[in-house]
Length: 84
Image (cartoon, rainbow, N blue to C red; front, side, top):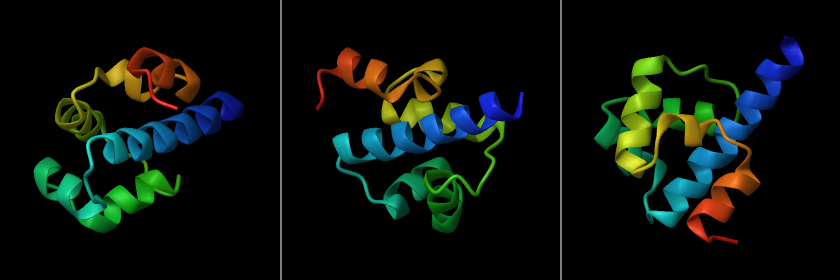
């Protein structure tokens, strides 16, 4: 279970960073839109924060993807979005 958890955290971090950059948003802009602190977005992207389901849903909505896409393998998300 620990390995699955760690893998999901890494995937989440990479996907949020990827989508934030695709949407041309800074961590601060994303945080303001999600009504969380900028340091919290940074923690999520560095795998040190553990976001709630509510925060995941907010981030997915802002990034215009589904919550399960946030947790998908980054290559799968890139393929779906046609991003390198």
